Image (cartoon, rainbow, N blue to C red):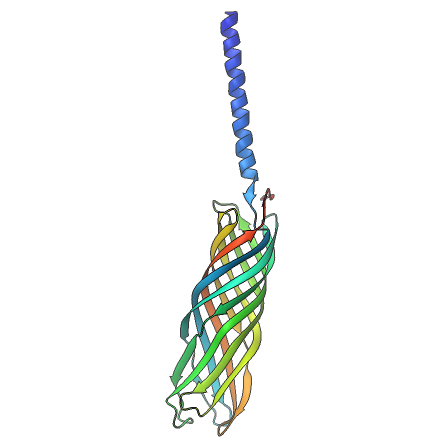
Length: 234
């Protein structure tokens, strides 16, 4: 009986050790999560959309060259700081592409069949604020806003007028990222940029006003130079 009891106690003791070790391992694994903190860099590709409306002040006519779409690609660099579930950061990005839109010119532009607008090669400097959801893949949803800078222009096919310049504006957008590895994430992002009213003079049409804006939807791949930590996701 004594031998049997010792065997029972030994088996129970070993079972308890295994159970405690298993629970500890699970808890440790749950506590160590991929962190969004740190510097990151990445690339992106998607579609950009031009929205440009132009008016001839003296003639009282206008044209809308919105709707031009183009494939765009770019890169980004930024820094995130994770505070519990909240993620704050800043990012600089550049998107290459030439979304041009065109439409039939109004009758006040004789000799030109098409009038066009362009917003291209857009740079962004923005802040980011996000929320990390405790789900498989570690989902981050975020909004961002700040400054935009782009080449903007409007012209006629007959060369009767033209305007090109590098302009500053404001930017607003948002997106979502999923951690697919400790230092890698994929995501999708929407951005809108507005460059306000731009007034310029032409001959023979006098003063013209154009309002360029830009939208893009991009898939992104980021690499984070951060560590692993145990953020209090509660």
